[in-house]
Image (cartoon, rainbow, N blue to C red; front, side):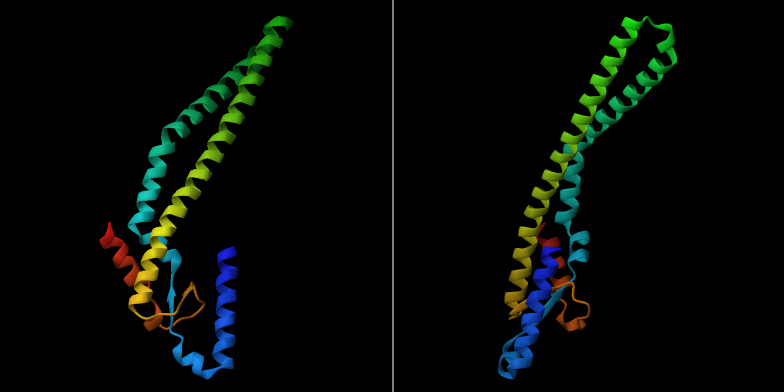
Length: 170
């Protein structure tokens, strides 16, 4: 959302400058980029997804198995609770509650670590992509690149060139 506000602000400033001074408008060369398409099709994005899968798949499977086992144990306790002595029932209930709290903690911790890692990988990927966008823009003599404009003529769009460069860099 912050990126969108920044782009909109930059677009508004450019539009004001363009309207206010025709001489500046002649020097301003604008290009556009479709960032969603670029991210979805870039090999760097696909590598990031694979890296995330490798890093977190085993832990996700372990948590899923633990959740299944805990659910089964809770159901078994509910069926057998009346047959247990009050001391055994209290001990078993306390054990199940402790396991449930521990499982919830592990799940939260897993989600936080996964989100942190996703942000790190996304930042690394965006740094690489931004570098390629800047290189293509400089080669074309572009002074401003607008991300995801509502409308841009095809000749202003550099997405395909950036994507080709990203694919060849891989």
